[in-house]
Length: 123
Image (cartoon, rainbow, N blue to C red; front, side, top):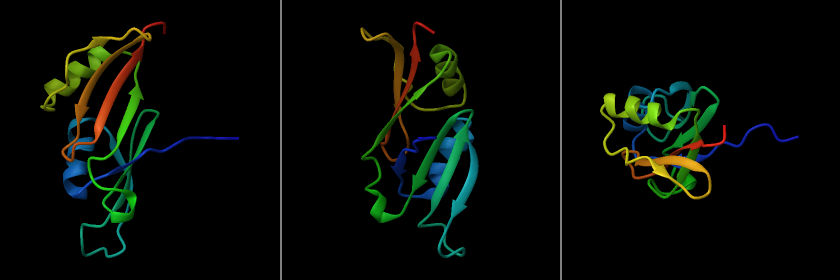
């Protein structure tokens, strides 16, 4: 039985990624692994907000920063968009009414990874 799929987003600096995801997007740091505790990177960290779990990795083998994307479904995309704007997140694009049944907006993290916030209009 599958339990959860965790997207791995490559980041260049774990401290910058943590500040963005936890400080601006409202995630909380669940864990961080550093092979050398005296150095901030490389780092493998898990962040969580409600039921959304992400892995942010500055390990080179996990792909170059900015090369990935994730879609996160929420109950109210417009409210999340306002929350992110109020938190100073740069560039939450306009809310799009998609033909496939979603309301969505896009933004990028400091490394350029794409984040799509989506709401199923039928729910």
